[in-house]
Each structure stands twice: as structure tokens, then as C-alpha cells.
Image (cartoon, rainbow, N blue to C red; front, side, top):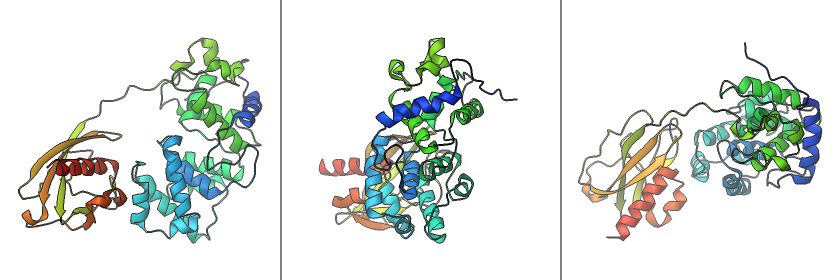
Length: 355
């Protein structure tokens, strides 16, 4: 049976929210998708969009993408009507591209419901791509529902407050239980954002600033003397290195781009033709022709590292070209290539310009 975190005299769950919200009212980060603490009028579309973008990504990285999306597609109805390729191109560089596909699927589901997001955690969970965290965050922040919101920052704060020293991911149920003890009925959205802010600015992974923490009087890890050791993370498994080729095929100042399969890694994105490398295997499907070897692009994915050999060739030298579109080389940045292929394109242009 999973052990549950139990409150101690120096960690009173009932007092965590009042103390934290006083701090948040004075120190909340100003973010483009937020309203002021205690404010009304939060746009569910902006909350949902920001939460999807923020998964596995930093606030600093998300800011420009959020501004671009909300300017181009100011409502969920606008996003639902967008062309898939345009959305994938606008997402390029933000990573974890399945999020962009789920974003479109969810927007279209909400549009089919009249353009209004459901306002309960349960109903939000039924939308495409909304898992436990995102549904709870939207329910709490956009609609003021009491929901237990646990992201990586909250996970760290809770593990330290309650001194939960079981290694992750096994500790997640105990952390969620403790977070539920601390979550208030009122101002649940502000509480969730306050916990996120605390983890991002004070209770950081390294060198936490405990003397500035509004919850230091409740923190069991601080009493134990080593808050930075929590949460305990399981040892990382070494990532394999895969190898592959990317083909730069040029004709009259244009480069051949293909569209990747709708599902799978980088699904639906424009890309350079490649040799079918994947997370599970090295590339194997070589294109015939006479190729000049360019440099090597190295890129790290979540579960593997990739060494991508750049191959250069003129279209006239190839008998069978892959199906695709010819894109002006001088506008390649506008193609919305995933980061690994954008790196390869920059390398190819540098090789070409160098002669």
C-alpha cells in the first residue's frame, strides 16, 4: 500500500494556502496569459493554450510562441479553422510536436461544442490531449474550480514541504495526496499558480532560497537540513545514439521539402527527406544518386540522441525524387522546420555558401 504523507506540527496543510496566497498577492509573476491575483475574466482559451505550450518547456521559451499564436488565432474558433501545416509551422522549434497535433484536435472539438470550453475537470479530461494535469490547471485557473494541480514545480515544493523521500516516479501518489491536503476550496487557481511561481523562483531545484520562502515555517525538508535533495529522482538510463541522413536537394534556388507522416515523431511537419531514422533504429532507406557529404548535425531528443549526416545533391543528378514541395532557400526559416532539420538546413546553406 502506498504510504501517504502525514502532516506534522511544522507542516500544517491548512495554513499552507493562506501563507502562500499572501506572498503570491505581492509577488505573482506577470505573464501574458494571466490576470492579476484574485482577478476575474481569465480566458479559458489562453489558459489552455499556455498550459499546453508550457509542458516540458520554459516560460521564457513559450512567451514569443504564445504571442504569435494569440495574434494569429485569437480565439479557439480561429485556431480550429487553421490549416494543419500553418499550425505545425508556427509551433516549429517549441518541441514535443504531438502537443501541436493535440492542440488542433482539441480546438476542433471545442469548436464543435460551440466554441466554449467545459468548466469542470471531468469534462475537460474528455477533450483530446488534456491529461490529468492540464485539465486540473484549466479547471482551477480558468474556472475557479477546486482541482489538485501538480506540475514539476509543485511536485518539488510538495516533496520538500512534506519530506517525501521516496524516489520518483513512485512518490507521485504521495505527492498528489499531500497537494490535495494543501489545496484550498477558494482561490484554487491562484493557489496553483502561486505554487508554480514558488517552485520557479524560490524553491528551485538547485540552491533554493529558503530564507525568502513564505512556507519555510512549514517545511519538513528545511528542518531536516537538506531541502535540495528532494524530490529524489530515479537514476537516468543512458540514452542510445542513433544515426541517419538528411538530404539537401536543390534546384534553381529552391530546396525539396517533404511532409512527414501525420503520426509518429515530428508527425505532419515539413522536413528534409531522410533515410527513415527513428528512436528505435538507425536510418536505412538511402536515396540513389551521387551525393556530396556535408557536415553532421547532432540533436538530443527525449529518449535518444541523433547524429544526422547531411548529404548534398542537385536535383538534376537524381532520377527519382521524393514527393514534396520546392521551397525558396532564402525563405527556409519560414518553412517551420523542426529544430533538427532547421539545423541541417543552416548547415547546408553554410556549406553551399562556402563553395
